Image 1 (cartoon, rainbow, N blue to C red):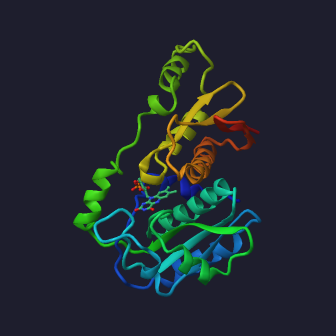
Image 2: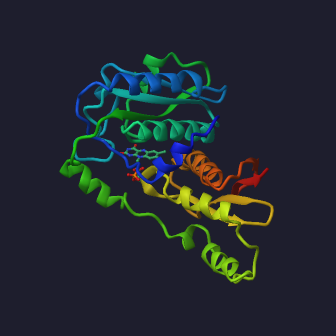
Length: 270
Ligand SMILES: Cc1cc2nc3c(=O)[nH]c(=O)nc-3n(C[C@H](O)[C@H](O)[C@H](O)COP(=O)(O)O)c2cc1C
């Protein structure tokens, strides 16, 4: 997939939005999202489809609860082959960030949607599953009380510290500035630090932030937290896109090498 530099800037702006004004999308934005779905949005492992009628009925969250979504004129369904959650997370987050650059609200919804109804609309191929949806639209100006309470309950605006998700990263930064390696380990290059900072802001199911990182000299290793929420396979795909966007901001591209559990993959600069 071609990464848009604007997606990096969208990372800091994006937050989940669950309540929308029921106005149609501006034509240009709708056309851009349709083009994204057609051009960027498909591989054998993961694809996305836009749904523009009866959108409210796709979401099953009860008012005031996690996952209650209302008013959006459009939804995107993220579909993948069983076992390809990472590819779906990566693709879906690219779509979410693209929508963010267009000034639109989104919200990953992997739990509280009607799987039967959505699957029926999409004509799934054998082995495919709708793994998540996002509403897309213009969010209401102020989040309703129920959503604000729910965000507080999952601490949606908070993120784990850099030191928690990437032990040694801050000491390594200080060490490098002083011309050495204060951590006594491997120095983190600037691209890896920007990549981790970008991943730290990513959305995750119930904001559990299952990602951890280390720099092992060969590349940036994405590994997992000790306790995982069930959305973690999607979350890791989302984090991979954020890592690539952070690295690209520093002029670095690379490839992912799959790793055995408990690690997920290593990003190695070209
Ligand atoms: C894979 C995934 C699944 C999610 N599923 C749901 C969901 O079913 N219902 C919901 O209300 N929010 C869901 N969320 C949104 C998260 O709760 C939200 O991203 C997190 O609390 C951080 O808040 P933020 O997106 O505003 O930064 C999901 C997020 C991700 C990444």
